[in-house]
Image 1 (tube, one colour):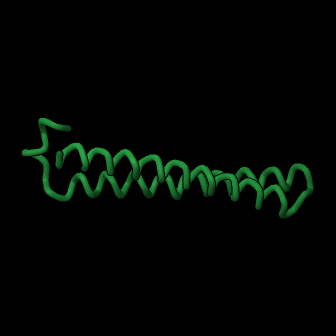
Image 2 (cartoon, rainbow, N blue to C red):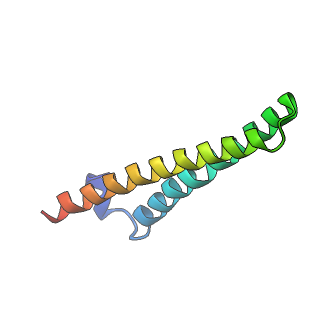
Length: 81
């Protein structure tokens, strides 16, 4: 992506960043909801496994978001140095 920056539209890096961050929010939480609901139906533990799965998915989302934000921040700092 470094060589193509001059050919890239100004909005493309922002759109890529938005998609990456949105994916870290949406995908784990939706997966956790489906897995939790399935586990509750299988083991008749409504709503405890659902809540645990969504809570765990939320933690995964936060870890992924923080990791990506730190990486992007380092890229910006390296670019400005």
